[in-house]
Length: 410
Image (cartoon, rainbow, N blue to C red; front, top):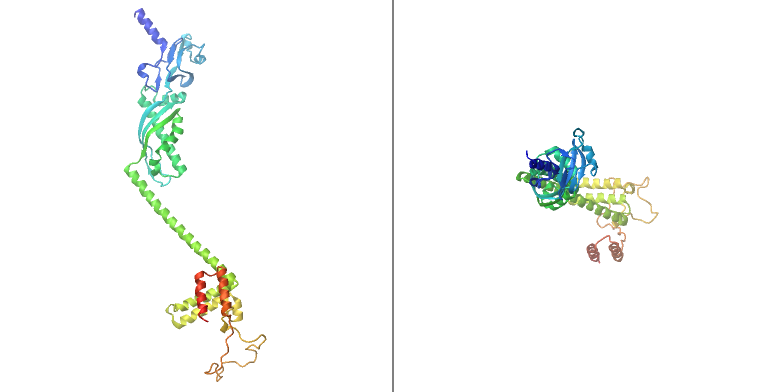
């Protein structure tokens, strides 16, 4: 070997830098771990240099040219090889890009995931491109060296990064759908929101010291089979929700009807019947009357009589006062008791019983009839009707109809 070859060889050993053929690599590892003292290490403007020994991080050098000696770089003391007389460092040197890497394409299926609303398992597919930057070179090299160290190929490194990126996208999609209670069917219209969330926080990329700067042309879709599965599940869910809605509306309408009837009954009790017992007795008698009006459901005279008896019995059970008196409290004038106060009552002890054989019959032709008790006058009835209308107990239409009926009696 000539003198010039020796000099050139020595100069090569003294100069450490990323070669031009490796400028595009995100991570470049210097091939020789034996580094002489006084070597010149050059770090480009878009990278940094990291020193490792036995798999442990030792030190960092920023952009610039550095002379490797312990006086100006103290951490090199941890790298000195004593067996060579202290003139050689033993270290792995990594050059890591710290500038953004742009236009990285991605595409493919995520892992199977469950729809949080429809409870079906499907596999979303994502496509687009992203830009990233290494924000923690040490953490990146530790992860990189364990996965694909020494590959010298960006495709291998980017494939590793994309795997972490896909895991982050799946995590973010699950979080957004769960928080907003949205189905995976809605993902097509949420690409911008999801992209922003991934840029803000991509958990699996943060673990390896990377950060997504932007996502372009982001698209999420499903296979035809998954799309059909989700749509059928969504249709079934919609039908179930409509059934629940109809049932709720029906229940609300029934409750409204019951509330209205309760308020109406309360007004009747307060204004007319006087108490709930009287009102309930009146309702029982009205029910019996309605049954008679319908003809007793084809049961004939016996059925009508039974209905009247049942109605009267219910009325007396609901209002014991009626049973004690033997007649309704609200009897019409022709059914009211006759006589002045203190008049002798029929049925005293020892009185002759009506209806014995051969007794004269009341009501024979030509017999004088008792004069009916005088009822309220026309003016009193009209005043009472107007008072009911003013209190809101009857409508204008009911007022006019009853008024016309009263005036017909003049």
